[in-house]
Length: 339
Image 1 (cartoon, helix red, strand yellow):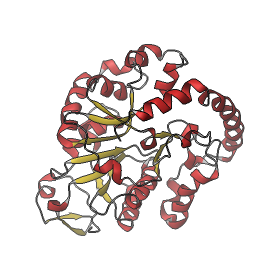
Image 2 (spheres, one colour):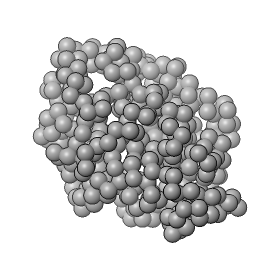
Image 3 (cartoon, one colour):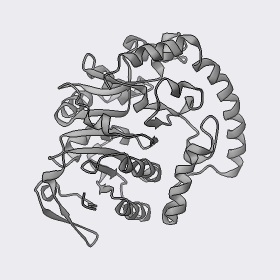
Image 4 (cartoon, one colour):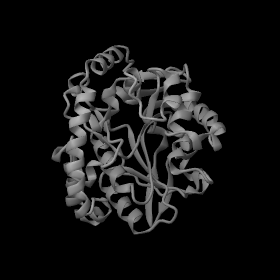
């Protein structure tokens, strides 16, 4: 695979095989005819470092023919974007800056609903990952999996298991309970291009004032519009970081770990994940000191408080997540996964 990096605003150049795109003095030959599958990240200033670490892992864990793309939606390209771009080049990751103006008043989390417009037209298969993930297993099986036409392939959200034992947090019942055990997390999904275009159009038509009353906003909208059109993936492809180390990895060995709640492992070595899951961020910061400052580690006075809080929280959550009802439910749903 060619070591291509593009900063693109005029997509007409990117849509044709062997057209040359110029970015900040860099001349890049883009061979679109060989590009069919991609792993996509979307981030902006303040979240680029974390996404880049995951993208570096995804590059190692993906076949050579699959592109790994980091979309930078920072409003104005500054030093952080330039530094992240440089490290992308060194790691064979396709870096693309795009002005977020197309989002209008929508939050950047909704940018994934524009992937059909953001991606070059020759990409037909998409694996989307949130930037607060780590890729620790071979992605080939998921990339080679073909969701049914019109379907979204995703992993059930942890809320499904809390719903099953009637332990949803206060205020979440109305949003989650109607889905039963079919509510998915949208931080990782596998989909073909034309299906996602249709899903996105339907979701965008519902996003607006409706999301103000939702805890999970666009995720819940995506669940609504894909009702009856979902292929369910194993929890190994979107393993919740807050249950690491409890022994649930024996049910499904994680390939993608999703750190869904604060604190996050780039901020320090906290329970339950500890030093091993913080280390990838420290390693990238050490190898590429030019981006160390963007790591967003917690300031010292917060670290001690978080360590104590996380130890106490992990003690309580371990008992909850190892309850026989949740373990049995998780095993049952794993048995019905498509991939």
